[in-house]
Figure 1 (cartoon, rainbow, N blue to C red):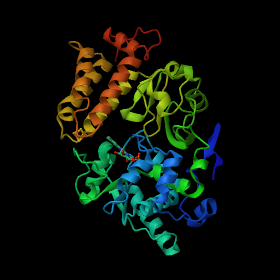
Figure 2 (figure 1 turned 180 degrees about the vertical axis):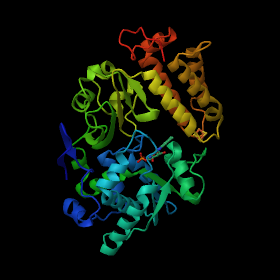
Figure 3 (figure 1 turned 30 degrees about the horizontal axis):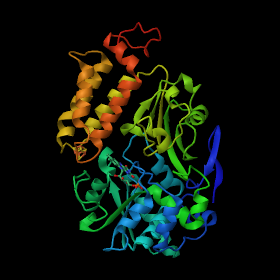
Figure 4 (figure 1 turned 135 degrees about the vertical axis):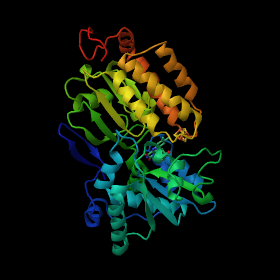
Length: 414
Ligand SMILES: Cc1cc2nc3c(=O)[nH]c(=O)nc-3n(C[C@H](O)[C@H](O)[C@H](O)COP(=O)(O)O)c2cc1C
Ligand code: SF4
């Protein structure tokens, strides 16, 4: 069922998973009907729907389900940790439609024959989710046994090997493994890790079917997606939009002032990429459209940088945060990220010595693809995009000026 909900003061989009039904199971039932029954057939329906994961990488959901079905009994993990500071869509989803996420867990667990399911959420949500799971059991809504596990507040704690480690009672840090988690994950069992939004979409697909799901979005990337809007927005927050929405119209309706007056847009969060608005013209919020720009919607973060803000300073702050958030296990994070952060800060503040731009390019190349997880790659991608999108600012900073602090470019970098 699709309704139109004015979630934003100036614009309405079709709402499928952000139902607003809240914690009340009766309201949820009134909006969505009973929890559907499912079996292995669901995997084919999800494949026909063309759903891609909403946790960042956009992997086809049905392929992941099929990879753990049919062999040894698998484990299901719903990932609601949301370590990305610019993202709040999973938290909003779990407040707005927690039962839809739990329905998704129930139908996916049944389709892959999982007997053990885990919900991995930040500390402030554990009590609420445990209560809702208990309410469902009392109401006879479903019999899935779901254990709620606290996700530490850390950027990399949501990476799937870190999630599995945390559920096994170890530190929530990523690990390097040649074996896929679909073969050997939690306690060596086949493990399916799926983002909570992905599971909410599966709950709707199980009810209304693949053809219904495809009535919104694009043929390659059907459905709706949740996006977290931050920065120079008229109303920062979470929106549900059809995948493939034109970025021009999204920015026009949600940012303060005219989008042409924005400094830049960060797409995909801290591991994403910066773009000027002119570069985004004609592009849509979809993987296929953004691919030619080296960008991806990731987990749906759209962060706008206001005129008067320095893109290099903003990037330096993010890279410093990302360097601090590494788990310090791998060379690129241990040695490379602090150097990237230091050089980026030097460039932003204008206290450079030597060839800081060459240093940044060198460190970015050195860390790329060499960690146990994608943390160094994502950080290098962000830095490269900043150097391109803010090329004029790089030039000014090297001459001791910063355009954004003073429109005529005469002011020295602070
Ligand atoms: C550094 C890092 C952090 C991640 N954080 C999250 C997160 O907070 N939530 C999430 O669902 N996926 C996160 N992921 C992606 C997960 O590893 C995994 O791909 C995802 O949960 C799978 O769900 P999906 O297929 O439904 O998208 C992260 C990945 C990386 C590399
Ligand atoms: S690449 Fe970095 S964040 Fe990822 S496991 Fe290694 S040290 Fe930790």
